[in-house]
Image (cartoon, rainbow, N blue to C red):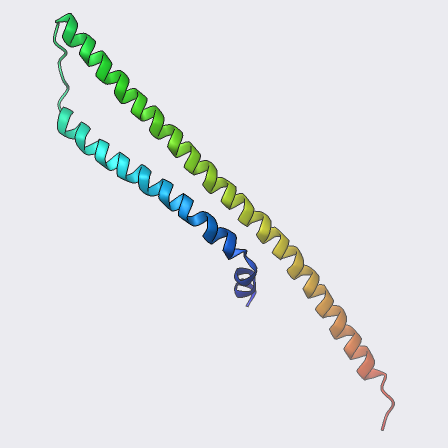
Length: 128
């Protein structure tokens, strides 16, 4: 019963509102990583490439590596933003759970006081 009460009080509207943003970010990141992973695997394979000694070829290889590094940097930034949104959502849920825990504790104490008052009232009824 405790968990069902807690889950009923979670602001699911906010969770649902943020879910599309998180889902879109995760899908874009996943699709991009899969697409780039295939193209790089096809281009480079598993073999170690030996760089040609010509200056133009070396310059081209450096440009390609810089582009790959820039892509990795962009992916890292996107991942960081996605993680930040997830962390913010998680922090909001934790704060809400803490608030619900306090409310539940207060309701428990009120129930104990009410039960104690009822027992007291019933024990002091005039005998019939």
